[in-house]
Length: 332
Image (cartoon, rainbow, N blue to C red; front, side):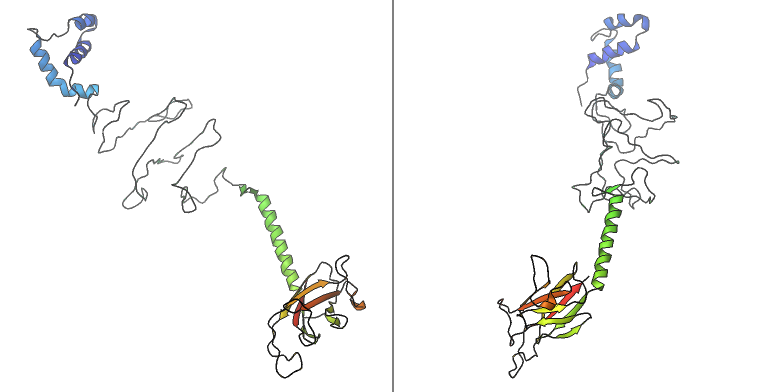
């Protein structure tokens, strides 16, 4: 406890209780230590009112029930401090609020509220109160935030952030006025719809083209063994080591693919026993592409023809005893 200053208290006492017309003289006369008429009485008054004086002047730390002190830390209370008023709202700059806290510094800091609440809410059982709660018991707003001249209203941060953290939760599912997001990842709603439409159209086209795909299976003898329709052999291993097929329609703008087909039961070379095949290479192209592909057989010099080149795994041309089975597919 801070040491009590008897002289300071005497000066304050004289200033407080002297009458208006004699306040200055009493301040000069005062109660003097050692006076025959005033010493004992002064000491008695000081002792009798010491605790009250300390509470009034704020010499000791404030606790529950004491006055709030300005500019220092007040003591820890054990019950709520209530400030209740009945003040009507106004259109003026001031009025209508129970309390007002303002900081004139340009570094801000009107108020700060800290607490140690653990996970939960005021509706939890047991309740876990937030650091700040605004509860409107009628039909108006519970809060307002306004940045008069700023470009950003404020920030809500949760720990280090990330997808596992939520900025807030709400049970309101209505559209928030002014928060109808026009952009997602920089794209406007119009952009998103257009992109979705374009993607959907491309997907539909791809599916439609896939549905129009046709295929043929050519065996080791250079014959069409199976097909979905429209193909015929023009020349296979006659003019050269390639196979030329007529697709039955114009191949411009169409996709093509060819694949070596596995087999383990076919006798390719005519000798006893099967000649299994599990590998090889094959390429395919449309015939008659200017400055790219020129097909040799006369019947393949048109836009309906394609050429397939089966090869051994080392890239060499196949022979009559090493022919490959292959699929060829035309899409679109």
